[in-house]
Length: 125
Image (cartoon, rainbow, N blue to C red; front, side):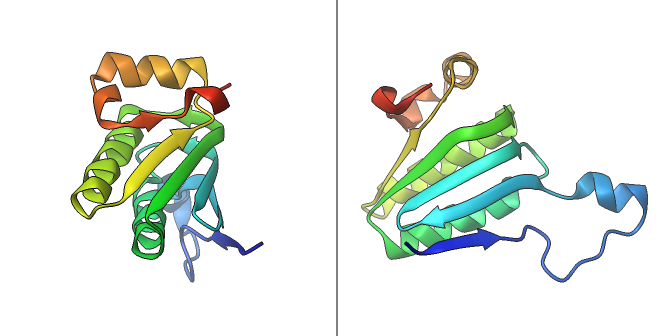
């Protein structure tokens, strides 16, 4: 198994309350073509997730984003996933989501972005 944890702020030390509040609070772990997220996937963490997805799409044709460990997910995060899915399709790759809890599926539906994302219903919570 090839596990890697991505530090969202490598080499940086938080300075003051503003820097602390701007830090990403999502943990990103990869296992082959699977990107496992845990914690809060919101506007603070979109850059690190987008970078991790793009890295996997350079190495694999089919990438899975596992959201089963995500406690908070906002519309900005959904937009990052939808944009990544479109980029993947344009390059002949495929991005799918798994582990989507009912609240995440509802946000996908209400945002209208569900049509842009492939959600693995068999693996959802």
